[in-house]
Image (cartoon, rainbow, N blue to C red):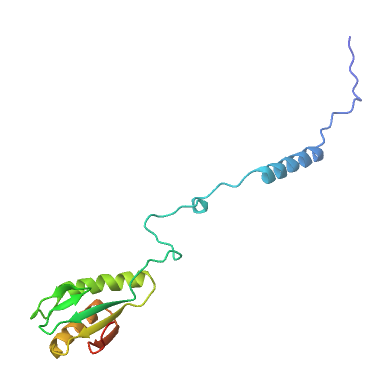
Length: 148
């Protein structure tokens, strides 16, 4: 018969070194892993945006001339006929000029050059067009100075 020895010591498994190895592995994986890249970190450029560094060449002012017969012209192009009190082509032109000046971070300036024979009502009509367009920088001029 085979006899067994009963005084053998049982096999023990030590847990402390295994726990240390587990913690070291967790630390290794935490340090070596890369965090996920979020959508907010992606660089993107939206179309249609203009940087502030780009300067658009714009005229300093718009000169609105009022002829003796009541016609209104801008840059030698007639935008208002005599008797038209609303002057819609002038209002549309001034609105576009004001929007362009606002985008360029400059002040929209208008110089009204009325002939001596023009009526006061026609000057008021042009000033109303400037007010409708939201332009506050208006200067009145006369035609007494001659150009060289």
